Length: 78
Image (cartoon, rainbow, N blue to C red; front, side):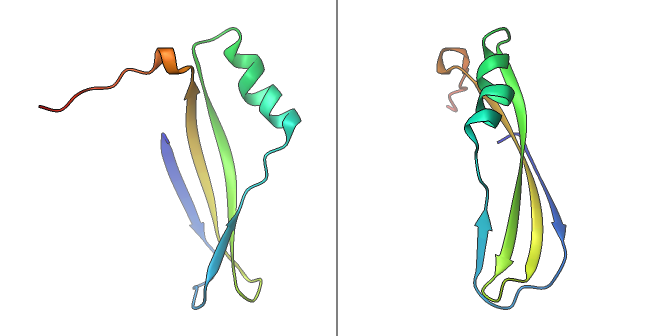
């Protein structure tokens, strides 16, 4: 995850559920095709959160950086 932004619409007072649906067309257009010609991509996923009564509590915008595992560089803390 690169960045997370939240818009709050209503105060939650019950259990809540987050929802995000990934479509094959979106996956191809936003991730797979761009990765064929560039090292990494950043995609925005809109995640809506509703309470147990169906009231829309928040909308999250999650920005993911996606790249091949061979391109991932990890720092080791000593």
